[in-house]
Length: 254
Image (cartoon, rainbow, N blue to C red; front, side):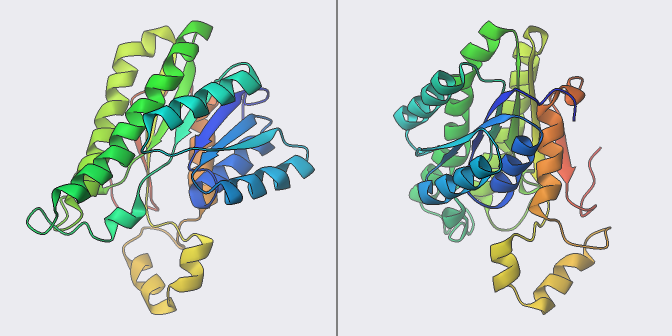
């Protein structure tokens, strides 16, 4: 990967799963990485593991639902590393998804919590990192979306709306600040078999999920991490405003 060495990158939602795999990949490529997560125990354990291996990784606790917490996180990371070259915003409230039925069954609290964390929290993260990136002449931002944003599912309307907002936010950022050196792209993961899912999902369900793919296997967190690392690196410097479906060919985009 070209020119990730020495970059300072903040990974929000980096304690487990896709976020943790991305932290590992970025650290292996030579980046200094700040992990922001509500799960501070998991984030600190990952940072300690990578520090032993020689990585420059530190963890900070923050709450994606609180603007003050977001601003404090970004300020702390910038103060520690002296700069901020990249952001991977990988946070969503997955507990709310479990009760996200339809627009008749959802109450306002489901919508408010989903949009507050998934969309408005991401907006506030980007607002916090942009000034320093613009001042230093550029930076790269990657946001996590979902095919739910475009699929038109019979359930999860709040989640789908929040992710459609993420796609729109990405295009806005690229259009507004692309000529000032800011790149913003989206990764839209397919079914990723994390360690937790692998341990808790029976083989019949795994086999059923694989039938919809154009691939020989399920996705792994490392698959998404590789795409994110490319988009944050200088190898991806001519990719801007795009939504990449990293999903084993489950769905296609025009």
